[in-house]
Image (tube, rainbow, N blue to C red):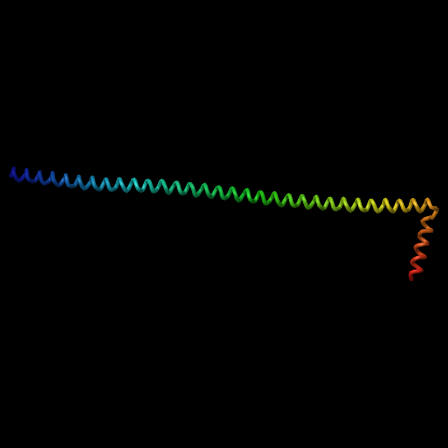
Length: 131
């Protein structure tokens, strides 16, 4: 019996060593897969961070573009408004020149002795003659 007991213990010891060897191989395989997964997860997180940064840059660029477009529209409105004001000013200057010319002619007429009534009668006569 002692001999068979020793044989049994030897077999159990061999079986234990075999199980330990299988465990070591499985643990090494698990550790390798775990390391690969952690590297993959790290790269995935890094890529997500890059994508987020790029998205933020794109949004910032779009915002800057909208601000520039708004500024351009504002400048065009100001330019158009300024142009309108210049046109109004030019019209007023032209009107002033016409009034000055009319005044000069009126002064000239009154100095030459012709009254406004005579001038009016003369114009009426011209109109009548044209008919």
